[in-house]
Amino acid sequence: MAARTDLFTSPDYFNLDDLLTEEHKLIRESVRNYVKKEISPIIEEYAQKAEFPQQIVKQLGDLGCFGPTIPTEYGGGGLDYISYGLMMQELERGDSGVRSTASVQGSLVMFPIFAYGSEEQRKKFLPKLATGEWLGCFGLTEPNYGSDPSSMLSNFKDAGDHVILNGAKMWISNAPFSQVAVVWAKNEEGDVQGLIVERDMKGFSTPTTHGKWSLRASATGELVFDNVKVPKANIFPNVKGLKGPLGCLTKARYGIAWGTIGAAMDCYDTALRYSKEREQFGKPIGGFQLQQKKLAEMITEITKAQLLNWRLGVLMNEGIATPQQVSMAKRNACEVATNICRDARQILGAMGITGEYSVMRHMMNMESVITYEGTHDIHLLITGMDVTGLNAFK
Image (cartoon, rainbow, N blue to C red; front, side, top):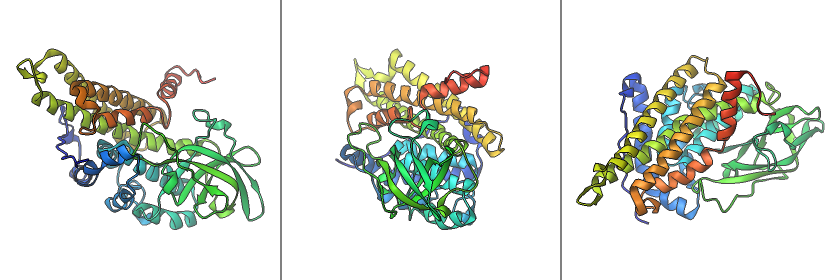
């Protein structure tokens, strides 16, 4: 397949750039240029082959996309949450799988080691994860328990200076290529705790998940623990219970809120350009009312989501954003992006289903993103419980 030329122009209908610092814009520009140069020309071919472009791990490390909000002393970027959001927006504009690789590494692996880990764990793992020398994954979802993680079956038993871990995790991004897995399992009292499982531990395997129609350029797998000996030094000392993994998911969902709008922006930009070039009945199709309705609604929803994300970034920087606010932004952005991908596909007609354009790939990717890290329905119920004070989960 011929490499695609990336002609992307970013929509900013309400001059949101005026709300960004010069540093924010420089960070966004560097990631945008990286996507245009390294991701856009190759990603379609990798998605068609259902292969993970392994070279991006080191590239993302070099670019500072792993753990950008982690302090610099541990190899992170020491940046604010708007910088992190802009990075995720630009990466997902390239492909949701690329953004997933960065989200998992920064929010689900590096963040819990930094927030819940010992100083020894931070020094051992974070610098190598930051550079991309090591890739990490996050094990919470199980074959039988996704939206209900409290019912997990994975468990570990005390065995002196180590514990014996048994169980399985499923739908784990990065798993097949990971050197490190942050795993959540129950101790003998039934409390959820986090452990760092390393690639060379006997009894630990990561079978690849095949046959996906979505996130095809992302590596997905299982984590299988068959009497794995994990040193007690690898257990997180500073958290117990589901608040540990849920705290990680709040950080990752924040990145998804920004990221999915990147995919929406790419589909809008593609559809807008196509509508001006494609002629039917003697004029560009962008001159017809129904096409203009689609495009006008796309840019309106993108703009609303950009404003919501920016405000959420300010609240995150101030340390006062709630998990419920993050839930609303994640759900909103996923719904907006899913609808925009589908409308863009219609504007492109038959060309929209080909690999010549990014739209169908984004559209298929969004079917995963709208479900992972809290399904669309679960996020609605989180907002519902927040505004009514009544629990509809049980």
